[in-house]
Length: 169
Image 1: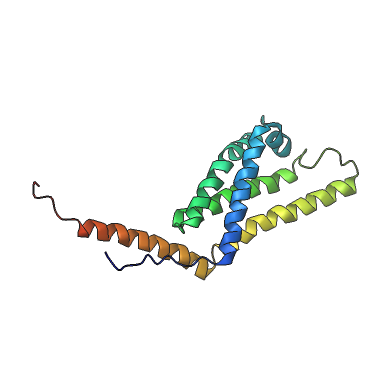
Image 2: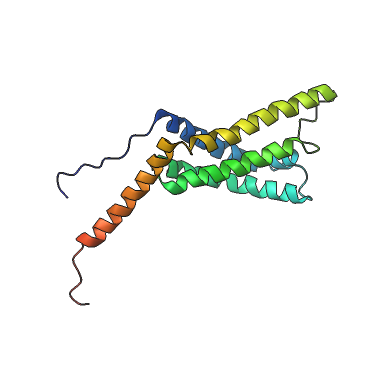
């Protein structure tokens, strides 16, 4: 084992941007939990199926995004999948919620302002949905996470092979 250096794959700068985004999302969704009227006002009343599902996503999101930060930093395949799942759920529910009654700020009264606010929010949430899906499915990024997973598997296999057999067995 002496003389070996741990050669971790180099992370592209764009992955640092995504990791920072995941940290902000974990913090932001955690702050929403402190004010329960936030998710309820944003997603509609919890007496609807969509309202309850949205509230469940709001409770799971801080922990999911937080765990995905660790997985992305360590280049674990599950970190990639977790971030994709969490961002799809979170931004998908936000995108749908914008078009439900009460999905825009209540101070907007003019139908043109309401339509523009919905379109702008749809573009924002739509891009937040599409960007991670495209980014994490780029061949070089997907390979980065697969190589890391392969290295972890080979390390654990090598450790099992290097351990001497127990003579008492």
